[in-house]
Length: 190
Image: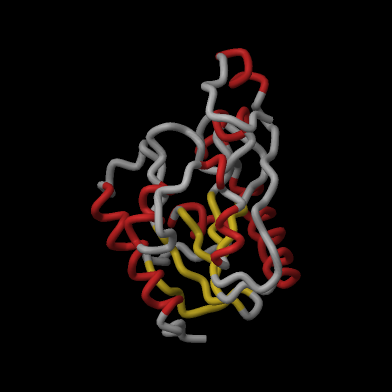
């Protein structure tokens, strides 16, 4: 695992397949952000949403979750603000479509157990397709869901990957901001 922003080599990327990345998590968070699974770049450097072009960190900043643009290498700073990061599926792949439906369902069960243990107020799943598959909710839409995970409100956000062309940075900032307003304004409906 790297502790500084040096681009991994091709060999390091290939070696990152099936590796995991340590959760950024603590009890009682305001929001636990939940990615689909780590990409190879993220697994090679050992920090969430680390691939250049991923828009997670800029979206957090633009939405108001952070007062400055954090680097993936500063991910643990989120804990001081009441936020954390995990994934539905722990193992790294080149793309999320390399995950099986079974892995997503099992990942959903593991996530539910993690949420019961750590008790965040809200779980923000970053990828509507992953949520639909992991929790058998084929008609789910973005935003707050009508159900909870344990006692945590479920909120669906778009996948911030640079490969997700459906959402431009300004769109991600607006959608992430809706969550920030709900969380910081204590407007989450349980």
